Image 1 (spheres, one colour):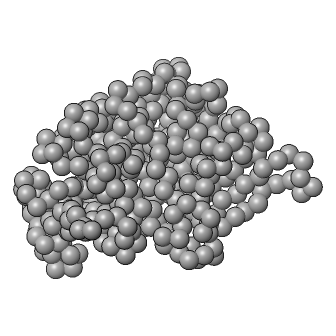
Image 2: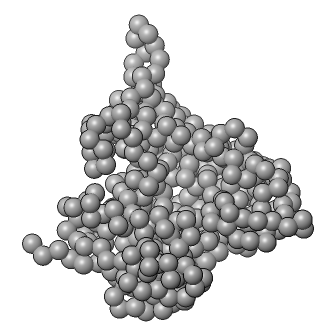
Image 3: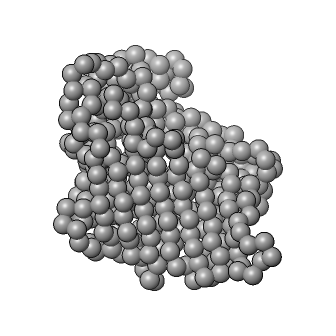
Amino acid sequence: MERKTIGVGVISLGWMGRLHTRSYRALKERFQDLGAEVRLVAAADEQEAVCEEAVSALGFERSYRDYKELLADPDVDIVSICSPNYLHHEMALAAAAAGKPFWIEKPMGVSAAQSKEIAEAAGAAGLVTAVGFNYRHTPAIQRARQLIRDGRLGRITNVRCWLIADYASSPTGPLTWRHSIDKCGHGVLGDLLSHGADLVQYLVGRIEAVTATTAQFITERPIPTKIGVGHSGWEVSDEMGPVENEDLVAVLAKLEGGVFATLESSRIAVGPRAEYIIEVYGTEGSLRWNFEHLNDLEVCIGRDQEFQGYTRVMAGPEFPGFTTFQPGAGTSMGFDDMKAIEASLFIRSVLSGEQLAPSVSDCWAAAEIDEAAVRSADDVQWHLLPEVTVRITFRV
């Protein structure tokens, strides 16, 4: 059978753009059943040196300084949007107008309104999409979802989820775009809690209402003199500037079916590096997962065991998707593997016309949760979540 060729364009080659690029390259080896050859056609980046590297080292056929030229390239069939948050809205709308399915990182914009516009534009154009909710692709999370869906935990009663990190814990860390309302929108809400909201909804069900509190503990930071990649490589001056968004958030949520959840995120924790944990409790058992040990799933099923407590199980061949990367338990998967799975789901969605990857509607839903949390922190009230008008697909 003849394999279809899909031309890829990647916009912005920072850390995430390079990760998307590696993920596309991994498809040929890891997902040979895709029925398609992925061709790295073009990259777009404002920096000339990065454009040169895209061709000389990263495997792209050509590069552009202007992303609009990439979207106009007839050989580019699909697009990855890996720019900072404040550019997502413009670029995603342009991709939708060009009729190009796109894979975009969260949050999709600096507000729920921008996320809504992106989701509706993609829907109106009839485009499948993908969003970077990569933690849901971990085999341990997939196995957890099976256990919950099969009723092994009984009736779900409550969920606890926290994403605690230290990337902004130093008060001498740079005043990056992540600390600007205009360029980032919300702070740790959009950066980390959106992942938590997606995990809770993916595993258990729709969040219907939230009440929340937020806090800012580092109010100013040194202004950078040199831009880095991701959270590293920045150089700073002695001049200080104001931090405009929150460092910490705590949310109490009501879910469909009477389940309630607590969610918490911090970017200034001292100790945890990336402690992203979700715990799901039911009438017959519970389970836990921690990204810092992403190959492990802790499970307790039943109340009357002689030695009541959790069993720690390492991911292995019985976990969904594991053998695509490793032959057996004890050999671990990593962060890049989650993005390769996401890339495969995006390509499968494009080939089938069926939304298999996390969608822009999923990201819009998370943005509404983030924004409701901000409103609640202001008025100390419960806020109902609107149902999105573009169908959300919680599945893989």
